[in-house]
Image (cartoon, rainbow, N blue to C red; front, top):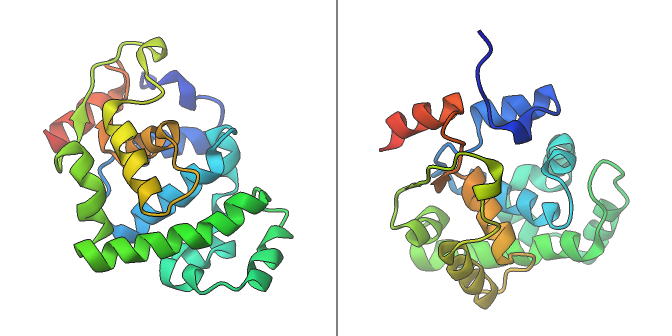
Length: 192
């Protein structure tokens, strides 16, 4: 019998794999959190499948999402990244990735880890939602509003509340699988 999944992921095998293996799974690795943040900032104005299909290219272009290395990218290096047809070639987002890496490193230095900083917006645990259909899915929440405001205050770019909510969903800070999706129960049992 075919597993019931959230309908947003059914467009490709890659999307289904991402839905089944990653989306909504709580992430506490700083480098993985930074990867999701980078990818979500490039998603602004685009579909997630566009970004997901270019994920490996983004990893190559941005030093496997190593914020330390990215923070040292020169303007010339970023100009070279902009020539890569395998990524989304948006100048502001490409250059913003360097400034986001710098802001991320400052948070690590100040707080001890990006994980400790970012999970404060959900009191350190995933929020469990019970949405029955995609119409119930908000574009943002009070938590994503607060996250967006604080990230912007700390110098991040392309971190509006909608991007922050997409990040929260990806990083498992919220369980937004629909209640009839097989992953909803699996993640609920795993994290609550």
